[in-house]
Length: 481
Image (cartoon, rainbow, N blue to C red):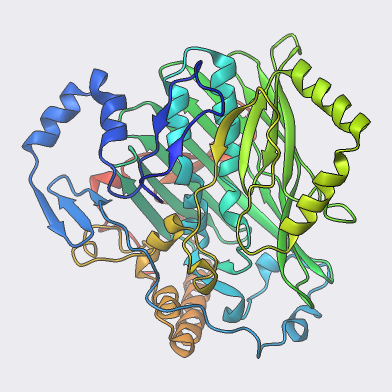
C-alpha cells in the first residue's frame, strides 16, 4: 500500500481528514490510540525488539511488518499452453470446491491469505471509530465493505485451498490491528478469521464457505458467510454478507470479473441499514462494477445515497440532490456519456476514473493504484504482494501451520511449477491419509482457535474465535505440511 495515498473528502468540512498510512507508516494508529493506551505504551517501552530485515520480532512474540516487499520473487508463468476447456468441460454444473484443480489455475496465495485482503483499507474502520454521528459511521462501514472486495478486480487466479488446520496470522502495528485465521472444515471448506484493533477500538470477524460452480463460460463464486464488525467505543455491531462474484470468458476471450447482488449492512444497535446494489454488467457493459445504494434510519427514512464502483471509489450524497441530478441527467441525455465511459473501462488494464462525481458529493473511499508490474505478478495489489513474505526470524515464531510455510505455495511463488505440483499432490495425499487414520480410530477433527456457534447478532451459523493464538503455544498443533 502507498504511504502517500490519502483519505480525503471531495467537499471540505464536516468529516475529519485522515492520512492513510501504509507500509512503514507509524503515525496514524498512534494518533488514534494516544488517549487510551498509556498502559500499552508502558508495556511497549519495556519490551526488547530485534529486527530481522522487514520483520520485527519482540520478546512478546509479535511478528509485524515495518517495510513491505514491492514485488514477488518470480513473475507469473504463462497459461497460454494449457487447455482450460479440456479440464472444465467435465465440471459443468458441479461445485468446484470438491474438485482437485490443476495448479495452472492458482495464484501463490492460500484462500486464508486472500481473505486477509479484506484488511487492506482498515483505515476506514479507524476513521469510523472517531466519528460521533452513526450515519457517518455507517457510510465508512459501507465503504469498508465495498473496499474489502476491491482487490478481486482482475484477480483471475484461484487461491490454494487451505488444508484442514492451516492458519494465517498478520500483525500490522503501523495499521493498528492483528489477524488470525484457520481452516476449520474441509468438507465443506470453511475458513474462519478474527481481527482486532491493537487499541481495542474494533473487532472484525467472520467465516466464509465459498461455493464455486462452473456454468460453461463462467465460474460463479457464492461467498456464503457473515461478516461482523464491532466498534467498541460506540457499542455497535454491523453485519453483512459479501456479493456474488463471477469470472467470465474462462473458455475463450479476455477473462474479466464482476460482482453482483444486494448487500445489506445492518447496525444492530441503532437499527440503521445500508442497502448496496452491486449491479450486474448488462448487455453492453453499461453497469459494469457499479455500486448504488442508500442508508436508512430505523424509521426507514432514506438519509443518504451511496454510489460509485467497487473497482475505483465510493461517494455519498444527499438523496434529494442525487434524485435531482438523475432527473436532469435523463432529461439532457447524459446517459450516453456514461455508456461510452463504462465500455471503455470494461477492457482497460489500468484503473481509470470513470465515476462521474455529482456536485455536492463527499468521497468516502478511493482504491490505491496497483504496482506498475501488477499484471506480471498475478494482478496482485501492493498489499497482496506482502502476504506470503517469509523473512529470517519468522519461522519458529509463527505457528507451524501458517500458510507462509506451505511448500507448494512457496515453490509456485519462486517460479518452480514442477515442485509446486509435486508438493501440492503430496500435501493433499497427506491430508487424505490423516483423514483415513482419524476415521479408523473414530476420532473427530478438533479445531484449535475457533469453535462453531451462532453469530451473536444474526443467530446464523458461525465460527467464534476462542482466543489464545497469540500466546504462542503451538506444541499441540498437527504436522500438516
